[in-house]
Image (cartoon, rainbow, N blue to C red; front, side, top):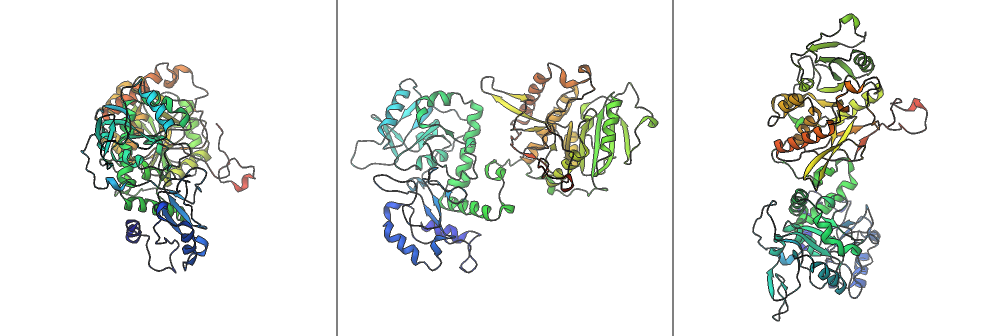
Length: 585
């Protein structure tokens, strides 16, 4: 508990002036309720000068309850105080008020573990090393282990008078704890007397993926940590199926979860100080949401070779404001002219640059082009390459580029203007309209490109997307491996390549704007549309796997987010709406 108080006093949030403090931490040690006289403590709290029935007070408690019931919250009259508790259930946890914290294991504070690679093969599929488990759980586990030799069940060693916490036994075979956890892919974390248990922290420490079987348990820091990345949660009634569930996880997924478990341990669980600082950070984020850490900052493992936000680099200021629309075309003048006419209505448009990718046929004479109030530049390329759309042409004088196909005639000027305004808030991301997602096949051990309408997306297609001009330079001059050459040779996947590039550089996913999901050219025949080819989806899945090999990782980030204009669906007069022409699905 002294370490908790030291962590608070050393934190940037600390003040010794109670007049300016907005949060108070009483200096009574209640980490373990068994060491507390609950009735007397409630009276002591009421005597504190600034108590005010517990309002704006924070109390740390890792082991709540006492014999025989072991309730899941501190059994003390704490009034309106917040509890940073280590054993909350969904019944006792006050969401957005309390903070669920882990139960720290002081017995392993100075334990040394031999460093092991996340990619190392491990002997055991599943290990259970908790002691004192309920007999019903043990019976089920022994039934499962009878048909799975890689399931190791241990308990405390019975030989000797004194119990050694760092020893576990299966019959007469003795194992060293927690070292044995390093030899298993998954580690069981079962409900015991206390809902919160040190077994969870011990598993994270060893890079063993926790398998949590405790119905109603509010996982530590679950307000900000995405536990689907690092743990497997199974209902108690499904304990008998645990082995079948774990066997469905691919090795690629296991490696990712193992890395994430270590990331959680090293950043939020490894010491009392880390636990205390994480608790204070969560509360600070609630009070000051405009400076709160984002989901990615809490959960994404930093890539030491990547620039988190490249927009801090000293870029040349734009010579004009707004965005430049770069339209890639081959031989569809009618739909091209429609796109140009619609683009000219967008308020923030600075210039239109048409990339004429047809060397056999010159572009139409200027007299045939639509008359628009914005500058129009036609560039005829020397070779038909998809990468021409991302070349950093000198004619592009704005920082923002709208890459758009010549058949995207359905977008309104309001949708395009709104997309640009969203990009201005996220200039380091790819912001666009058509979205896609990548999936991993456990059976094929390959990634699959998926075009079905999903809430989860990991790509925004550059048939209609805003990006920073900086990425055009990276795409043209700094693309890893031979990706650009592969794209040009196969006339496919330049948009996937750009998504890989931006996500790899920033560590962030794309942003989809507006609800529209249909982007088919209404006047184009199937022979004119590349994406109508029956082999198209297969080829794009192959693209994804080729790019993964080139990057030696999967940089794409899945997100469940869409930006829509305020009031766009509300039944209010259009006069109060900034964007009135926003299409439906």
